[in-house]
Amino acid sequence: MKLKSIDSSIYTIAIIGLILSLKNNYGGGDINLARLSYLGDNPIDLWGGFSGLFYGNIPNTFLVWGSWLLLFQVTSTTAGLILISRYLQLENKFQKITFIILSYLVISFSVLLTRDSTMASMYIFGLGSILAGYKLENFTSKLFFTLGTAAIVLSIAFRPWLFFATILPFLIIRKTNIKIIPFLIILALLPISLEKLTYSITEYKKVHPELQVIIADLSSMTCFSNDNKVREKGNVLLNRISGTKFEVKDICADFRLSNWGSIGSWALSQSELNDIHLNSESQNYSKIIISSNLSNTSYLEIREDWARFILRNPKAYLEAKSIQSNQVLLSGDTFGLRISNANNFRDQIAGLFFLVYDLSISLHLLSPIVTLIFGTFVLVIVFSKLPMYLLLRNRNIIAAYSFVWAWIILTTVAYIGDNGRYTYLSSFIFYFLIFKSYVEIYRKKRIV
Image 1: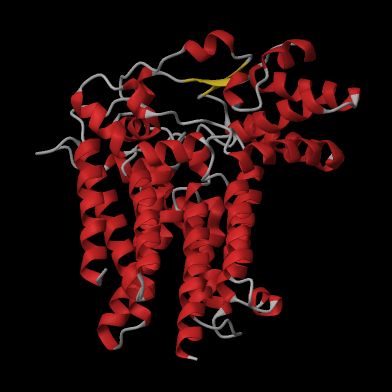
Image 2: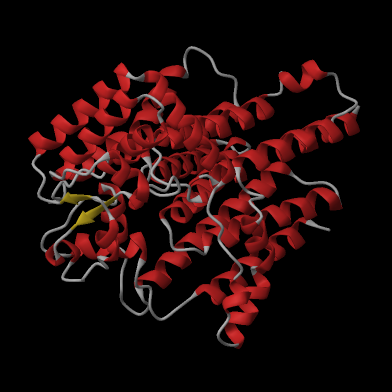
């Protein structure tokens, strides 16, 4: 299998995936709401400042905005994968087939309209550009480096609490020394800075989306703790958010670990969503209704009480986070099979094409825990003849495990639900790094 055949395979997967994902209407979903709010007269920052700015400026001419977004995501992902394959210089059929399978999974994720899919597509492009530039010289190298770095920073700006991910490409292509540390620190801070900068060039009304995390933490501590004082205090803090007087038994009767929305929901006006009526079914059963008119003073008081509550009850907090981390590790949601819901011939073709991806999601094969277990199994089998100390010193392997665990920890800290798409990019990067280490070790052994 020649290099051109790898490119052709990736192009084919990308084109088919894109064609089968295009629609005439892209209503619903967080992306659409963020876009509508940004374009309205009274925009809010519920979906993040940078997200609204990005999605709100996607054109809606010639093609529907969602089609432009899908085209951007698939193009970015495809370009990144091809650049990565050329950097790796795959040598045998096994390596090439494995890379094509990984490419299929990544592209299948990139044709979904979610923030995480946008983030993944830009991150893959950025990683490919930086790796490609590493093997080039002069102006071309600097161009790839600049494009790749910008793409990585913009990618992580969608979820800036994952700031550590910006430095990964530079850790795997060059030795870390004292000179590069200031650059890495600045790089890690750029997504957060970009998110803050967004507010200075927009007219967002701050509704404090961090309250979702606060409600998820307070409800988990209230309902999981065996300490009655913790339960009562957590319940008081929850009621303070919306001025309600529910008892602990009322809160915990509806509590579901899988989603903060079992306890809380937003009360938004139609003007904040560009005159689009938000489905308010959740408000019919949610106990804690967050007003978009909550004052900044009240929010700061709630945040301070939440932080103080955690500091005074670290055991209860860690217990809640350990349970939430299980959900993150397992990617608690199940995507389902598109082919089972096909309504026409086109849907059936799409269901068949994405069947392997849908099965992988439904069986949680891309969840962090399965990724870590399977990756370890591959390392043991493939590198069984290598001394253990060589594996423990391998930069790619160290980066792979560190990357996934950092992603798990920070996603758990910011937990609001167990949606698997929050962690799929970390699994893709893990497999890439393990695969990269295999290709490089195989090449060294062959040369020797």
